[in-house]
Image (cartoon, rainbow, N blue to C red; front, top):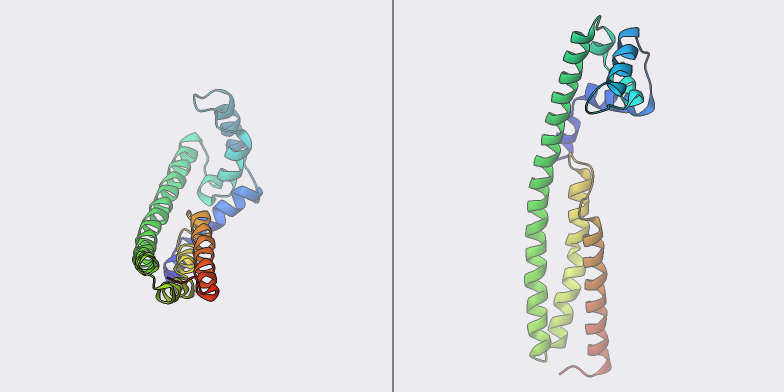
Length: 182
């Protein structure tokens, strides 16, 4: 996965960074075209965004007319769509791995509940401790953050799973220590 992140087109990354920070020069054709689309178009493209994005693209900077800028903007769109598809593919792959981890946790916790119902608090405690020791929610976060997407869309859920698992483990240990184990 980390290798996949390094295959992201560097030029697209630099372009997006430059556009976000306003780095790069501009040209009269970029200025006039961006002014026109910000006032006289159906989508009302923001002038500053238009100038930043096009000024960060070498093809747009070398354009001599609106057709050249249109081609540059379409190429930027294609690059963005392609990058977004890679992000989505990576998220799907990594979320599938996380789903397997959560399935394993679910099985273990269900067996711990069966143990509690059967009066086997020590066995339940061991299983719940194993869920915490395996720490699949942290593995899931790591997989997602280190992947191509470089973000975790289920960060809150992962954190909540850890907290509630720790609570269940602590309560079961308390039950075990108090001698109230069935």
